Image (cartoon, rainbow, N blue to C red; front, side, top):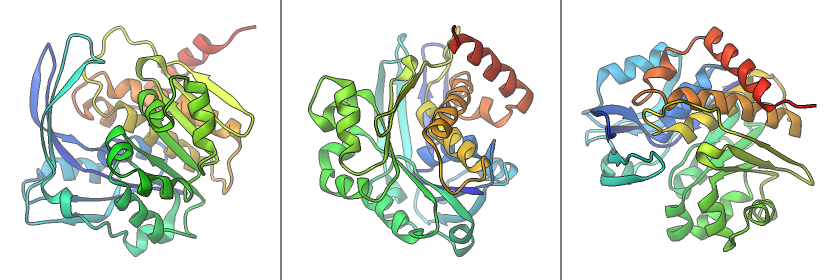
Length: 304
């Protein structure tokens, strides 16, 4: 069973209070695909420009990620520049250059269509998410979509239409409240399900995430870290690990319990993403390290 990840592939310039790096591998699809590939075969659909470094392509290849859905354009790659304050929850976007992403028309390869079981629509314009969903309709057994406040504000009709095509919506707590116009997060999660998706995950950053189902509810904390180095891409890594774990189960249908288990795995993957710039810690993660941290996490969350 394999995962198809579509979304942005970017070059990031990131500054924290301790260090700064330029031309890092970034983008929602990049983080999610690398996280997913830790568990299952994964393909990626996105666009890059002529300036996209060969080292980043080699990294994706080294994870055995199917790159047939990447468009190589003559323009420049999507770029994001941001700075994190001392409180890592406080981030300022300094510059965004959409470049080739602005006119991108997703094209899923035939090979990717035939092998997909989990379709992960990573954070992107709803029009692009619709395009990918339509191309794999009838192929994927489970469809996931991530979104953000920008699309809620400027593309709400398209986003609402997408909710009727997916099984799981993922968004953060402020976005859930914004979309449902409420300060009650539990009410927001339940109301979002009524708009189409069978399940909803609300991410709460350092405070973990909540899963809403039909009369069912699950919550798990984030893995406690002594130090957060760079949280860029943590949410994308979370849902990428989530999708990869589901695909690893080899099922065509998933229970609420399966999704809860996937959340725990995604949480552990996201914790590693926070411990370095870009995907540096993710790409070197071993299964032994992962399993040790998962067992520690399990002990933190159990009680009698």
